[in-house]
Amino acid sequence: MKYDRIDSKLFIKNRKNFMDKMKSKSLAVFNSNDIYPIGADSTMPFQQNRDIFYLSGVDQDESILVLFPDAPEEKHREILFLTETNEHIAVWEGAKLTKEDAFDVSGIRTVYWMKDFEKVFFEVMTQCDTVYLNTNEHYRANHDTQTRDDRFIKWCKDKYPAHQVAKANPILQRLRSVKDPIELELMQKACNITEKAFRRTLGFVKPGVWEYEIEAEYYHEMIRNRSKGFAYTPIIASGNNANVLHYVENNQQCKAGDLILLDTGAEYANYSSDLSRTIPVSGRYSDRQKEVYNAVNKVKKEATKMLVPGTMWKEYHMEVGKMMTSELLGLGLLDKADVQNEDPDWPAYKKYFMHGTSHHIGLDTHDYGILTEPMQANQVFTVEPGIYLPDEGFGIRLEDDVVIQEKGEPFNLMRNIPIEIEEIEDIMNS
Image (tube, rainbow, N blue to C red; front, side):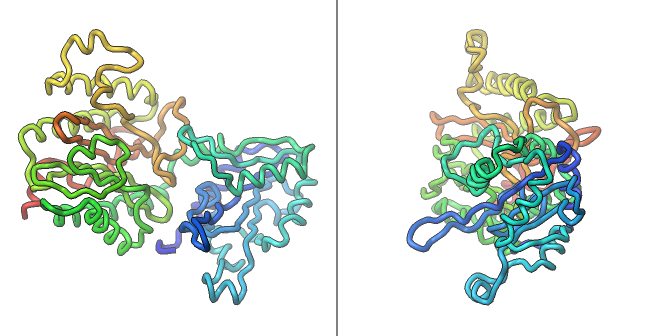
């Protein structure tokens, strides 16, 4: 891994918090992700399942974590199963974790090799009544690929049909949404890397560059700062491309007078950052671009102030919608009749600002968090209003990542990343 080793006390604490929520005489099982094939002998780069990483820090494939707080034998209250390394693996892939390495990473003393899994698992399953199985229940989850957890769930239910089954996900949704100080430090590192990449980009952009060249500048700076790269597929959208919300082709030439919408966050140690900035190709904003930009920035600042403990996600978005409506009226994009006659299910402002303002962020860019429960201190949210004007050939989105505080306004993890018009123009023209 490129990142510095994380203090194992984070994972020890995470496991304790999870086990405190488990039923009596129950165990929980978490699987690593597969390495997914592309074709021939090619595979995608490995990405660890965020749940097993959150609970163990183990960042390699073919790994299983079993938690059994009521196990009769103390050594079986936390168990890791790993692929045993050998000379062949060491030569072709690099050595896997040893049992000693696994303890250093996770704080788990009991480590078995994967070949012993079924034997040990049978023993502990005879001692419990309930098994917690891990499923992805994120509100945006939508995929057809069968995961290692999916296969395990089928195998476990077939092998042990008399056991009660419980869901690990509701526990993880709550725990993962509230960040430990160590997690916040890791997220700050991700944001700091994003800042370096953005500043590099400000010095690079000029008329005639290509969107993919800008992407390459970001990637270079991220990798040289111990990141794997982008936390999500980057959006480098010049001109009217900015009005395609998930534009990822990044293959057009940037023209003088246009704006570029950059939605580009780095990861660090599997933690995400999520930044949006909109900058002028020529180094100066036009008067109209400034007018719209300042409206978006004003909404962003006011929306940020609302992210405090007790705020409800749904009501928050309704209030942000009212703010945006006011700005769109001031810009002449809406009139009073538009607002008076709007569909409550699709308010008038949605013509120009059609996505949500905030989402949880952490180990996933759209991280776990239960949206029907009040916001809490140490949850991290994005704030990302936008105005999209295809008829005028540009769109503007501005986004930072902020930590909810016990009292006062949120703490901005991207506080040092330029956002004001004057600062961006000064850097681009220096």
